[in-house]
Image 1 (tube, rainbow, N blue to C red):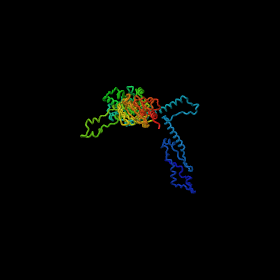
Image 2: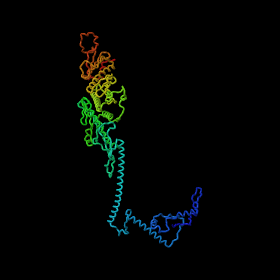
Image 3: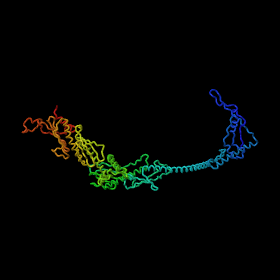
Image 4: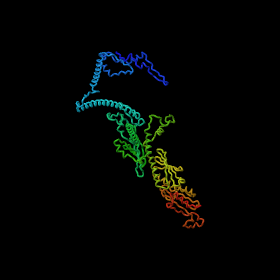
Amino acid sequence: MRLHISSLTGLSASSVAAAVQEVSLDGLETYVPLLSMSQNLAKLAQRIDFNQSSDSDEDGPERESREPWGKPEPEEDEGTVKFQPSLWPWDSVRNNLRSALTEMCVLHDVLSVLKDKKYMALDPVSQDPALTKTPQVFQLISKKKSLATAAQLLLKGAEKLTKSLAENQEQRRQRDFNSELLRLRSQWKLRKVGHKILGDLSYRSAGSLFPHHGTFEVIKNTDIDLDKKVPDDYCPLNVQIPSDLEGSAYIKVSIQKQSADIGDLGTVSLFRRQPKAKPGSQMWHLKLEAAQNVLLCKEIFAQLSREAVQIKSQIPHIVVKNQIISQPFPGLQLSISLCHSTGEKKSQRASPDKSKPDDHLYVLEHNLHQLIREVHTMPHPASSPFGHKRLRLAGPMAYDKAEISSLQQSEGLLEKIIKQAKHIFLRSRTARTIDSLASRIEDPQIQAHWSNINSVYESSVKVLITSQGYEQICKSIQLQLNIGVEQIRVVHRDGRVITLSHQEQELQDFLLSQMSQHQVHAVQQLAKVMGWHVLSFSNHVGLGPIESIGNASAITVASPSGEHAISVRNGPESGCKVLVQFPRNQAKELPKSDAVQDARWTHLRGPYREVHCGRMEGRNFVYKMELLMAALSPCP
């Protein structure tokens, strides 16, 4: 290899004169140390181009084609003396041949690129546009060909991208199906049978014996078109449920009247679900919940129908198709219906099934929900300790068969529902009776204070009978009504207990008699406050007209001086009657008696005179009696 050295013996000016490397703050200059001969030779040797060959025939045109594209040699320093090699006679010929070879190599590379027609194309260039103007038709043809070639390239690339996107979507859909299947398995019971994935909707794991299999199948959703945009609510998983579990179902409990004196209580819809999708919930979850709700309603109604046939009652229960009819009380009908509607019939039945808010029995609905979930849907273990510990003990202290059978006897679900319906009906009838009396009779006033803490089969209400303005002195009538299933227990203030039946007339007559007695008790308490003396008092008067409702009560009071007396008789039906007795000396028309001749007998009270209470001033009866006593009392 031939070595080209620009200057081998010459030294630059900078190497002869030492250069200043650094000037310190105190003016001291630090110079660059001079190079030695070996260092200067090594520096000059770094400028040798080892890529140039001594013989041009060995490298061929390949080296010549690379030479113009190679990196240019670094320029020498301005101060260095360039070395000029000696020229020989054929040096110019050699340089021309080298430049020609370079141009031929470049032309060869350009032609090889143009041959593929991928990256470059030939286009004739005219020197004079006016003389060599290409017709417009040929320009359009060339542009059309160019556009067709570009379009073909774009179509091929788009086809490859579509295939790649389809493969990615298929893989993503498979991953989404597996993730949805994992979510489904975390909420529902699944098993694999062959190539199918089956699920269970029944309550067999909770102890249910309903014969319906309740099996659904999990399938992969392949209805989506991969070429179109995937919707937001797309789910790669779908479930297929039995046809008899499709749609929605609920149990309707209604209490209806059969006579005019009993009002409709209303209806209750149990396990009625509104198809509202929660945010983040999938369609298969709503579908499975609705199907399981249909299965639950069918199972509960089947159990109620079986109990309705087995229970022996005075009025047999009627089971017709999807309806159970019972009569808890005479003139009252309890209807339990299974309402099952599919998606097609749902719009037709939506309007008649709607009930008014006033017609809804919220208390009964809550109690029935609690009862059904406690009896039916709560998990029951397969094996557990049976009853009391004494049942498992052997020996003479163990239970016999009769005691064990008595412990095992329990009410059925239908019996409990009927008992709750009876209690709700009796409670509503009691409230309606008290309200009707309170609105019809203004004096005395009747008040009802219902207890907020009640049991399922018993409620209590405290009834107070008072007179307006005299609540502090008239507290004699306080009743506690304990409303049960078929009867009402009335507890008086003194501890007496009276049992009433479910008949509304009995309760109404009893309250009317208590209100009648309240007026007489109020006069007694008022007489004590006014200083009058109670001469006689009786809750059950045997004289006078016979009352059709209860008995009349009467009281007689005398003024502090004993000159005047007031007698009050009050009956539930006959009403109130007030009589006043004046002294004999104040009587205008006193009949003469042959037996009473002495003047001292004139100080005795004369005959009674009736008082028209309707003409007296006063807002109620007790206030009128207060004015009457004040008028007859002597002034101090």
